[in-house]
Length: 86
Image (tube, rainbow, N blue to C red; front, side, top):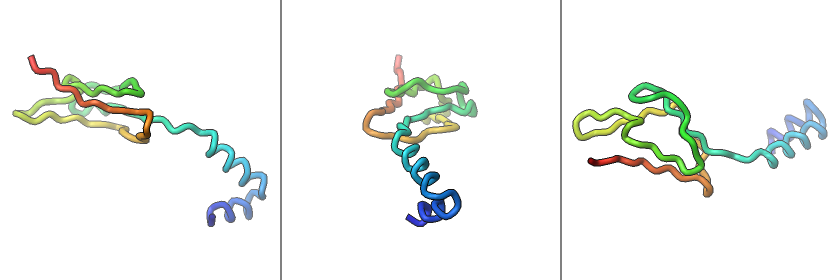
């Protein structure tokens, strides 16, 4: 509410209405981006994200992944960490 009052002071009620409208129509989306530190660099396709062992690095019995972005999860997104054992 404080933020809304500050916006109204500086931009008037039209600016506040635009800000509220923009926040209502913005659809949040999940985002997964590998940073290339321990595997390949690049984004992973979603909304059902699959992170494989090839996207990380193994050290002994441990598997490591590194992400630039891993955020904004909701009910319509999922992420599976998949290890392929041959």
